[in-house]
Image 1 (cartoon, rainbow, N blue to C red):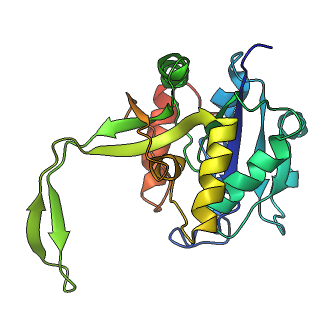
Image 2: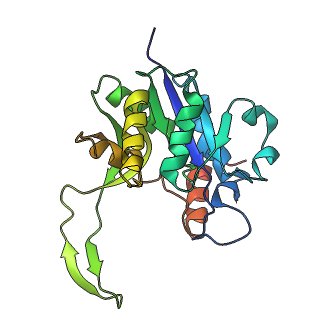
Length: 234
């Protein structure tokens, strides 16, 4: 059997930092919701067999998305944190994904994934023993702050990368890594951290800085500009 690739999208968060009446993944951006833009490159890729979105148990917004989009995606109930939602997504794929299949975890709040970056990740990790993630080398000077909001140290940026998504690992390996982390009382903030806890080193694949995560209101116009430039605004 050939190795296939699947995706899991955790989308159960409440978006407390954004404020407003809607979770950020359902905000309107360039004519569509943020999550529709996030799903677009995954659903359009002929290299991805399918995927699952992990939703809040009381999510009233998902049924309002286009029926043709929802028909192409499995859904499951998410958890309290990202790691719980991803693990639930893996459980939902257990009947169709083989242990050696790849799983790409992509944030619902990252609407600007370039299909070329997606292909670059798939190519770079296809034969990798561990897997990897899109990331960007840090270019800014980093400061450590005290409790009063004053800079007290400058952190060397050499060798530091900003993690993006998708993050791509084998189904069985990612399931084991997340399960072991949670059993140990840990809540890894991304999939690479769970893999690192096993003593493994994920591959860093250079991606576009435009693959931003919607976190604060000011991120929306930046993302809209990226989508308009790419001709993806409705």
